[in-house]
Image (cartoon, rainbow, N blue to C red; front, top):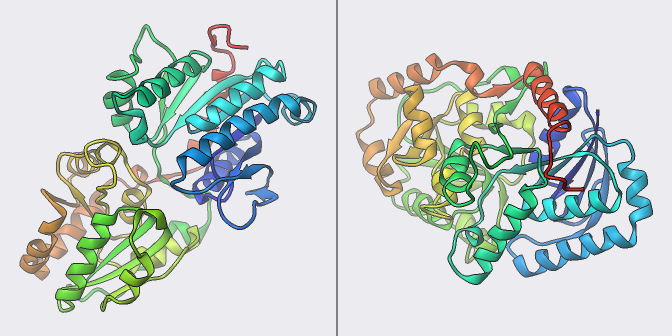
Length: 390
């Protein structure tokens, strides 16, 4: 099945992971999208990548102009797009901005491909009651009427946003596919075997914070604790910081004893990075009460797979995920981390690890059978009605 995948950032590692899933499931994707960083890739996980221009993290105005420009460019370059999209049976769009571009491209190329909307975050702009927020929700509803499937990474996105605010339901398609942010394992031994350090079950407890680093309050909590209590914690941060969210990320991380920022990593590093840690920081305050309360982040699956006990908040979707499976640490507030670790005994730590190891491992990773099921679902979506959205 040929598939056109419209993405917000060609350089996002999560995009590469999804492309790997699609290819492992039998799809033949071509990837079209913007990029953030120095240069766009020519290929992503074996799929051709088409650059639509550069955007910047946090600059919503620029991204809006770029999105409209790409939609207009689809009209001006319809001949090239027709060649790229020729034979595509499904158009998959990652995020609302790319859904607009994808629907415009599909219409201009007069293709009958089914449209699938992949929504992995609910931006705070979508949740207000001002004119801009209402307009964006109206645009999303209009575009969703042209979709044959909605893909979400957390059930709370469906429950708290699409059903509660956008009117999604049995009489208001599209149908929903829950596709969690699990670790992708395609027979690579480096990903299927966690390499754990020799744990002494003693202080300082090592906390790993990996992935999209974008929560200022989390950084403040961890740097303050590491500065005051080097006897209690050793913090390791790896990933891609959203520098626009911090006053001075570099200064805060380099000037804090017992806290280290190790930069970006690749999937093969996950067993080592989590295997070297006692706990994973899976708390996020960036959009408190909204997206942060609803998401199920990559790190909760990665840390659980590779042996670091997740720390989450009670009353949010990540906390409910851990509670339902009977493992992990759930705090009322991130500031409670100091008291929790102060009282943690070797015996209690061993019990936490035992509960984590007893959890069903397939809750945390996706294999080839999951890839095949995804592509089969996408293939079925091409045959669903799209409200005449040509």
